[in-house]
Image 1 (cartoon, each protein chain N blue to C red):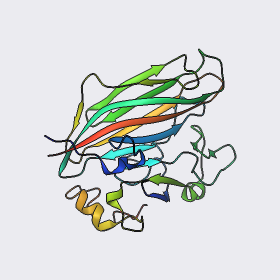
Image 2 (image 1 turned 135 degrees about the vertical axis):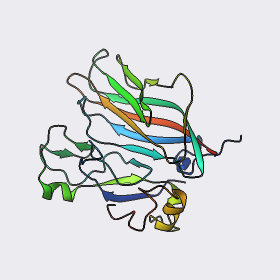
Image 3 (image 1 turned 60 degrees about the vertical axis):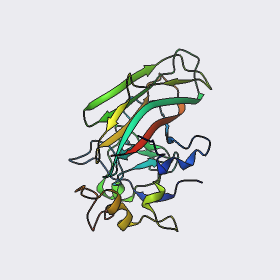
Length: 134
Length: 102
């Protein structure tokens, strides 16, 4: 079955298959903002193949900087990830053990938060979603 | 080509959501776009976790989001007909007033 790029991925011309989700931490484990959401069109299925965190800048020494990232799916929460020792320019991936298949009309929500002690971590969250004809 | 960016209402937690959110099927918030900044309650990137906003303050919150190209018209405005067709049969999105909270 051929994969077709998601229309919303045009923000990344070099990686047209990527849906980019930006989020900025502010030293709180409880981010009350749903910053990104994806709903599968009625005539499609979708594959969530990865979640990636790119650290832009940190305020503190290594060891104190923590970012948590996870995905809420209809089946529950997956990809709960906590990474320590984040430095400027580093990144980590929270790819699932297997591709996650989403059915038509299902919704997936992408979350992340900064668990650092005392300082702020600026980061970008990037999720990779592919749509396929159902 | 960039995804269309639009400024929309930021909705407060409700019975269906336990977070501040946008009433659109697919969106990505633009970093640093939340308005207005309310001292000790909101900042450019969000709402402080323990902030207690008044109803009037909640009603003023807006945020910029990126939305799928195929949900907008040629001018980059949300298109109700395109949204309803794309999410045909989905009760939450396939209805005439789908953008009433946007």
